[in-house]
Length: 325
Image (tube, rainbow, N blue to C red; front, side, top):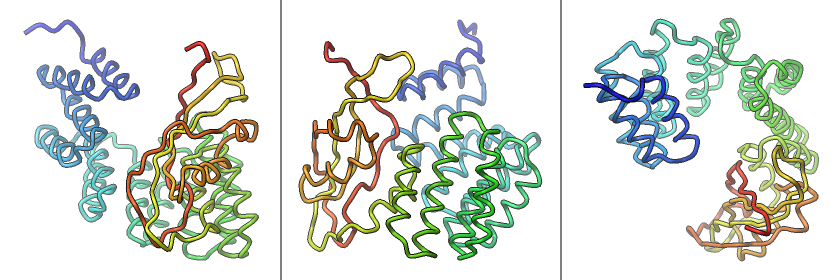
């Protein structure tokens, strides 16, 4: 059988489809790769299924791929990620260790992934051991990211001075990472400084200043989001969890666009009303945009009780539009 596209072209097409959130197209490309007997088909099929919410389908696909290519470390890596996200931690640890043993596997990346599983299990001492080994085998992961991960475990162990030293190293070495990851790292540094201010110094006001700083770098940072909710009232009765589509005017520079320009952003917020939700959202947006914000759409996705009000999740991307559109 002759194919019009090479495997390399199809892999590029699958990556592009995933980046554009066109998961059905990614699956079609994956099927073509599998017809060519190319193992990348298992990876892209699994990644598309995972994004479509079919976790078991994604895991089954990766396991099928590993029966065909048991030494392909990238399949072990995705399998470990998905099992970890499903809280199937012993299986995730096994997957990451299997991948670590494969030829060509990035040792530091697999050790970081193992550390994250141990952090999720609450075993920060073992997580620190994994991270120390990763630092000794630097290859694919920037040192700054590993130092931030160390700081997280050190904070949870109340070893705050050591955590501050790790964050200092992260700040000094962040420029070695690629630009996109730099923003994530700076967000982690600020958020973890906020955790120290809150937990050690009992200074919530300063902690939330750090949290706002973190959100300017990465508004999806979970620790910054948690800090922003820390002083909010608890929902003592069934309270809506809103999916809010917020509309505003963007004044910050955007490559390829003339500003100011309109934009939309997505938030999930525990609040009595959409208007109350909007007030919790404002600190997450750039200061110049805050007065322009309004609720474009509001949908109740669930009701909760006993949790603090405020933003619980947001997406990092924006949809920009001009008034003429």
